[in-house]
Amino acid sequence: HNASQICDVKGVPLISSMHEIFGRVEKFQAKADDILIATYPKAGTTWMIEIMDSIRQGGITKEITTIPSHELSFCFGVSSGVDLLKDMPSPRLVKTHLPFQLVPQSFWDKGCKVIYVARNAKDILVSYFFFHKITPILPHAGTWDDFFESFLSGNVVSMHQGIRWVSLMMCQFLPIFQDPMREVERVARFLGHTLDNGTIQEIVKHTSFNMMKDNPMTNFSRMPTCIVDVRISPFMRKGQVGDWKNHFTVAQNQRFEEEYRRRMAKTSLRFRTEL
Ligand code: A3P
Image 1 (cartoon, protein in one colour):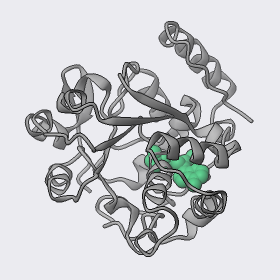
Image 2 (cartoon, protein in one colour):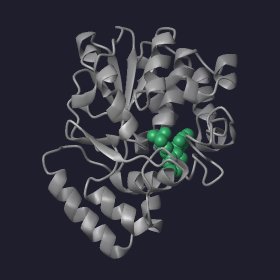
Image 3 (cartoon, rainbow, N blue to C red):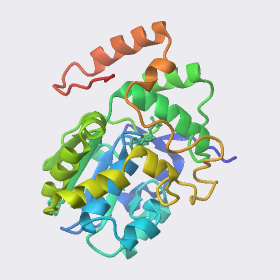
């Protein structure tokens, strides 16, 4: 078990492997037709990637059902991600959990399309706790109470510091959950694709939680266990809005609310934390 340490990269806590390769990440050359999917970890990244790729393929094609979703896009988290992206055919789907100020400059210079997925922070906290347990390359989570404290004090990997993207489409977990037809259509429009209703329905079905949970291409069961070990806990864990209620104590919820109000005072973004 080679749990990673948290390292500071320009004021952002990242895993040490990211620290080592950051010089290469900074110099990464984006192409104009690259599509960047930017999220805080556990916001619904894998879900959106599957939706985006299905849209780009024009529906549920053989590619969609036979290529593991972790090969559809690569992240800047490890050096292999940077190398794999270079060899990827265009138009590339590039995944990042980096906050705005650390995203390679060339994405802005080239005017790439950006899709940002956000999710309420309470569910993210719970989801991220379980994800730490199955991801040996992340620091040890400790107990639930430990992790709760680390998260609140900003001592977990890749805390976002506000969203200041230039040309981006904003998505949220809850609206996709509540009205996937509308959201898939919206993403398709943003990506410049027109799909008929039947195809949209097909994509919504293919990207539903139950389908993705059972699909070996999307449930991370094909991932090397040294990166994500789904034998410990499934990657497709619950896929719900409001699961935080099963984990937060009353006192933790109060502390969370206070901290959240303080840190999010300047944003007009609003999130519902339950249905
Ligand atoms: P939970 O741990 O709350 O279940 P990411 O891909 O950004 O790491 O996010 C993972 C989270 O998204 C997990 O949340 C996972 O279950 C959820 N998720 C993935 N696909 C989903 C889908 N099709 N519908 C609903 N939730 C989904």
